[in-house]
Picture 1 (cartoon, rainbow, N blue to C red):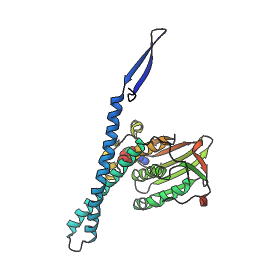
Picture 2: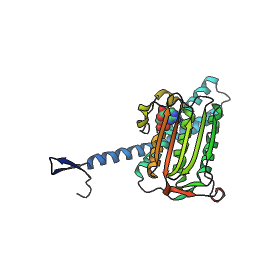
Picture 3: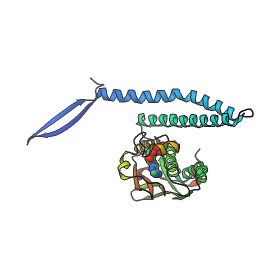
Length: 271
Ligand code: ADP
């Protein structure tokens, strides 16, 4: 059957013999494919009604002349929840796209320092709210061959997490540099840190160290799963170093083959 998928294992059997174990995993793969399609379809179907609900809520909040204060407060809460659902749906769609797309990422030159600058602008209001400092140290002409949108989601997720899991007045430092092994992007924070037992599981979908804290801080639980899937496409690796109570560093290691040298003014601004 050409549609059949087999998994093959060879195990030693006695001194000179080998056992060849063939397992039909077609059914398992079909189920996995159905699960992916289902998540992608549901997310897609939820997108439109959510946009409508969120849009109307916004109009109602804006036109609040006759509303009592209590009424308006409820509208604001509803709008916040609708917006959270929208983020979740967008993340689910992005993740299922990354999971099903096995092609190599595009080879456009991406000016990473410019990308980092855009991310910093986007998160500035979050950092200001918490009185945090975000600093950057980037190799100016170091770029990557890839797709800007994918790299943006991965890099931005690490920065928003750093802000989210760092208390007020903390510091966040972004580094982008190269050495003989490749290019490296890291985000360090002086935040809550992560106990070692959790680290291997952080990139699983919806895995959270502290469910309450993560929900309250507005995360979807999919951020690091997205980071991992993007990096897989670039044959890049995610390293996580953390000291509970002191802070964490998330580092993405890209292979030399992905590096491109860019002049800042020769590459268009992202966005
Ligand atoms: P979430 O939306 O919950 O932040 P993520 O996939 O981005 O989901 O992260 C998974 C979990 O990893 C988080 O819930 C949090 O417990 C932990 N985590 C991620 N980044 C950090 C960080 N910089 N410091 C401490 N914990 C972190």
